[in-house]
Every structure is written in C-alpha cells, then in structure tokens.
Length: 372
Ligand SMILES: Cc1ncc(COP(=O)(O)O)c(C=O)c1O
View 1 (cartoon, protein in one colour):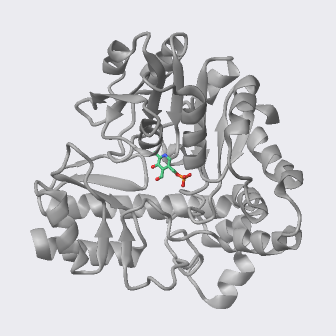
View 2 (tube, rainbow, N blue to C red):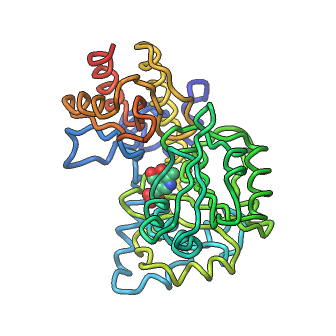
C-alpha cells in the first residue's frame, strides 16, 4: 500500500472520515482498523489452529446481531441470503451448493454418503484428517500415499494407488499441514482424468490464500459435470471459524444425495454473517495483507535460526525444526504460545499459524531464545 495515495485509497475504501477522525494511520498494516477480537484467552498466543485473529470484522458482527431478530424462525427460509452470493461468486446455480456448519460437516457428509465400509479412500499423508478419521469409524480403509518432495500432494502416486476398491480421492490443495500447492495444470488434468474413475473430493479450505494468478478451483470440473465435490469455508480469510459455516459445490444430483445425511441447519446468524463477510472486500484484503506480512515474518525468523520451511500458500507455515514437535510445543508453551501438533510421520516439523503482529513478535522472540 506504500505507493498508493493515502487519501484516495481511503476514499476508495470508504474510510476517509473515520480514519482521519480517529487519527489512525490508514493502511493495511494498521491493526487499529480491525483490532483482533480475542478475549478471555488473550494471554495465550494461538498459533495452532490456522485461525484469522482479525475476524470477524464489524460488518459481520453487526449483520449477525441484526439476524438475531429471526432467531425464532427455522433458518431454511433465509438460506437464499447466502446461497445467492455463493452462486454468483462460484458461477453455479444454487442447486449446486450445500450449506454446511463449517466445511468439516461437509467433509463428513460426503464421506458418509460416498465411502462404504471395506472400501478405500486414497489420499496423501500428512493431510487434514477430519474426513479420514470420520469414515474410518464405519470401516472404510485409508490408503495413504507419501507427499511429493515439495510436501504437496503427489498426484501421480495417488493415481497409481487408485483401483476398483476406491470410493474417493481426498485431495487437499493447498495442503494442510504443509501449506504446499500442486501445479495448476497438473491439478486440472489429474481431477479431469481421475473423476472418470472415482469421486474426487477437492478440499479448498485455503483456496482464498492462493496468490498465483488464475490458479484454478476445481469448481470448473463440477461445471463440466464431473464426479467432483469442492469444499470451501468461512473459517479462514473471513475470520469466522467459531461461527461454523462453509459449503460444498457439486452436481445437483450429488447435492440431493448428500443433503439427507446432514444433521443440522446452518444457524441464521451464520447465514447473515457469512453473506456480510462476502461483501466486505476491504476486510478480506486487510486479512490477506496481514497474513502475507506474518508469513514473511515466520520465514525471516526461521531463516535467522537456520530452520528450513515450505513456502506457504495458506495462513500457516510448516517449519523443519529438526526437533520432535512434542518438545517444541512444550517449550513454546512456557512462553504461553501454542503451536501445531504432530503430523505423522513428519515429527521434526512444526506448523505455525499466522497471528497478529504482537503474536508474531512474541513467537519470534521465543523461537530465538529456545532454538536460536
Ligand atoms: C484442509 C482443511 N479442510 C477443512 C477444514 C475445516 O474447516 P471448517 O470446518 O472450519 O470449515 C480445515 C480447518 O482447519 C482444514 O485445514
């Protein structure tokens, strides 16, 4: 933002009056614009759950408070408030969308609908475990393939592991916990070909953080009528992890198959909050900018103490500490800093979520003291 004319930028953002009146320095690096909303646990620096500490922004909180007036109604008559916005953003009709209480619910509902006992889900390890742990409870086998040398999904290795026992490929891109991104063309080609053989579930929880130009969402495959489900969430850039709202995109007949497996409605406050979050483009760019800065800070600290890391396309960085993660977590806890848990088999790595400037500085100081 340095090179932008400050007054024009403020005017464009509709903030000129407030920012000048309160004497704050306008710009994306100014935390006063969106003070982190932490309470209660302020003494703990939460770098373990890939949250966005700047959310939810005021626009979302106000929309949620106002939605309380509908608290006596079942929420389904309010679904269009959010469905219309998602349909416009994704370029699909509303019957392609299943609203869920956090994308975790979507992962489980897809697993419950399409993965059968005794059959296989093929994925890479380590990756996000919610769907995998859920389907294991009813006897589905997980076929784990190693990540590639960049710790992104190894698509050729997955392809080689798929056979007529496979009910689903669980594909997380960018991957959690590594933050690595697969090559765009390879990803498209992989999903196009594999979805002719089995169901491809594309978990795009961190899709909003991808900065590579024209990086494709697998929603394009859904539009082509492919056997693909995409999941997205409001928990990350939108800063609404505690509100629990996300969605699946798939062919209408698949949405109809999954809907009866759901256990809950999306809360009416979540519907209005998420719709307001989609409108608040200023907050989104602020959150992305703060995330970029924090990520760079993590890289700089890691460089300064000689720890390699995976360049991240998310709101966390996977750092090779060379020390068992249980010990790293324990030593960081002494500083009231909570960092990532073990992600087998990569125990000598630690996932650090991005935090506020203050969180990052305290984390950096603790890292240098403990491991520098
Ligand atoms: C890859 C991935 N998918 C899904 C989720 C679930 O997100 P939520 O249930 O908050 O939408 C997460 C949460 O961290 C994640 O990392």
